[in-house]
Image (cartoon, rainbow, N blue to C red; front, side, top):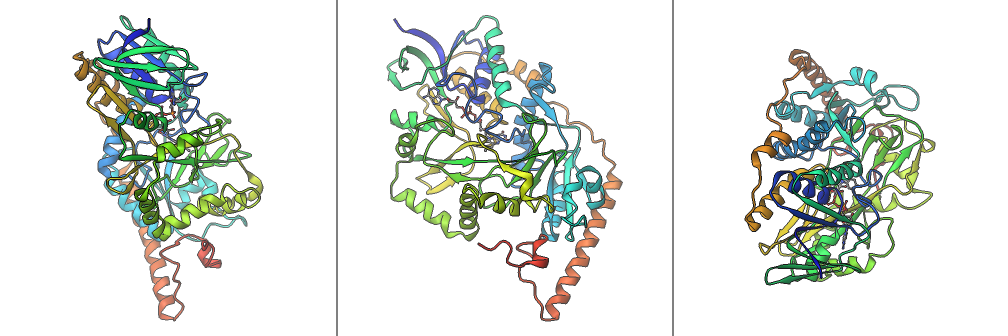
Length: 505
Ligand SMILES: Cc1cc2nc3c(=O)[nH]c(=O)nc-3n(C[C@H](O)[C@H](O)[C@H](O)COP(=O)(O)OP(=O)(O)OC[C@H]3O[C@@H](n4cnc5c(N)ncnc54)[C@H](O)[C@@H]3O)c2cc1C
């Protein structure tokens, strides 16, 4: 006879683990089962080698609006609060300095305006000019000859915050913790790939190769395979999955002290290149991720090519979405460049050219393609609206089964997404969610007071603006002289001074 649980979770990545923890700790649900395809918890995108290990609060992610950042900050804080509550400092959660770097007058002005807009939500944000950057992150400032890079730069960031998480360790901790909660049974079955889910009149039957399990409610947190299983059951046919692989490059020594993000082109759906100290590699700097569409749903695992085609559901609408994306020259160049980043022999040189925007003196012999690092972001295509969806997607059927797809920053938002599902599950099963306990333990009440000297910050901002004004005057002088520099605004970083066609492909 098959065993019956109140809730079955498919997938033991960070999303499945966070949901198991919240159901066990904050609800009166008595039996939970987690079914995981592979031999361990978090072996796909949740693995520290697969993702950038960042907690995305929205302060240095320049594509986030203030409204989006205020939501992201709340869910990101849940991860922080979980880790601090269980004393996981320097084992699961780590602190580095972090910043978004503006390069060239246009980006610098953008960063300064963004700082004004965001400083209330992030009271610890600071503005760092070139002089200050020399002391905290010197490799951002000097070129190959040891000279200062010529263009204006600014770092807007903070120090002393929790920035970095080993999400695999966090997932392990959450599942073990879920098992320890009183009055709830939590069973984890590894090597248990769900092959079929069947809807009954009351509940579901879930099949793996050697098990048949019943459930009142099912949450599928299987990454790209969530949509695969949804389609198999006849749900979500208006969506397709585009697996966008991300790879990394590793330096052979520590060249950054903290996280350095760049100003992101809002049209490009994936995080711009950034440099991060890797917590699994003793702080060596990891650059990336790149973005390349791969015809498979899982990285570094065999198979899943067929699953890709099944989940893509290729048709005229997909062609139209692709054509629309490729019409945009920024997106076209980005896709082409990222394709070249995967080709041996030329990839390193090309990548270094891009990464020089962060580290002007970066040399090809300082980095290597990080073999075995990287993952797949299951980006969702909405066929009804004929567009690529940028964030996460969740199909709540209203019939006792939910399917979640979680591209970046899905690890950061694991506890926030789980809360949404806990509300759905408890409502559907007529169970209780201890909202107060959840808020007390995981939601940050008091915004920390700023320790930053506001006057000093104002001085930095005006000094940098004066520098920009001087550059503008020089630029218009050049136009008047008949020596227009057309690439100035579009490519406002150092290479234009010497090689105007540096970025052309
Ligand atoms: C290059 C890259 C960089 C990223 N950087 C960040 C970052 O810095 N910060 C951040 O917050 N996010 C980041 N992300 C996103 C983040 O890694 C994901 O959002 C997160 O790992 C998703 O977790 P998940 O549990 O939903 O999916 P996954 O981690 O993919 O887990 C899904 C699980 O389901 C299992 N599964 C699949 N099919 C079945 C089945 N049929 N039966 C049973 N089990 C099944 C899989 O084996 C797997 O264990 C990054 C992603 C990539 C690719």
